[in-house]
Length: 372
Image (cartoon, rainbow, N blue to C red; front, side, top):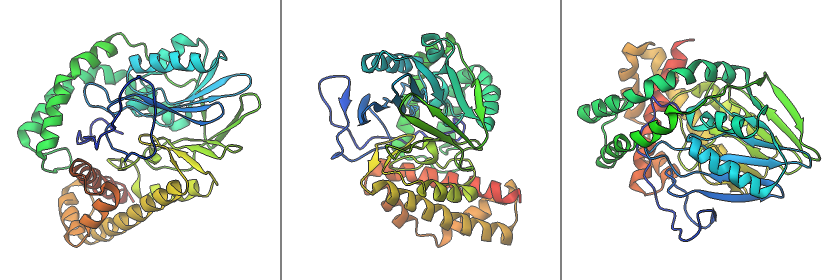
């Protein structure tokens, strides 16, 4: 998820929990785009996923997956806040005394990578693995993040003043309130980042890397562009578990940027892997056929929108100057209400979030098609 284009409309359907900090996720509860409590779930013997509470600035934190072999441990994504990464490391040490030798960044976005330095401090010499393009992006983008972060409040205040987000979508009352909450939560987050020691990937790959943790094979694969240019998935062939990064996010996808035209084909390759359990970049674990059904729904949405955007871009013209005309033409007879319901149900905040990601999808599809 790109900070510059991410909408803050991620209010929660609610996850009713009480008691201990670490709770097993109940699969009977509806998933939501906002996470109010830190939870973990055991996926298979020696395989766990941690879902993090959103940061005080309302920024979501990517899921972290822990894979334990007979000899060593691999972690997928280090989340956003160093404090959350430290909690994760403490939890890992309760699960096993084996060392964490590998940390995989599925893509460059900050909510999946800002904990890298925390893992490096806890496990000196750890190999931080990423696709070649992701490694370049992390090395390029992350240093500037610390300079840009204090300016976030100014950008958010301007959005509130204008009443529209970066895609020109009019803010709902719920979105306005969340921007206000985000501004109030910037200080504690910035306090963490001021002392953060960042770490870029140390080991990169182009198409696939295979790692043996001792009795457990892990395949790290680049199936094509989608959410970013360097998306990686992690696949456990024996357990038939796939960790997708933000190629898949549930219940409402992150399609604020990226490569929508190529995204669908990448998801088709993903769906052919033969997994039975899917761990998305954000949201609940998908299994029992829900994983394939949801992936198929994403592909259907991408195919429909990119076809329409392509038709209108060719008719009306490419380039940023024609974006609004293309957007209006695409939306004119598009059944947005039905698509919104298929992803968001009838929950107002989730519906607002879908509208935001849909607007971003049109913007990014038009940009990608314009380059052809």
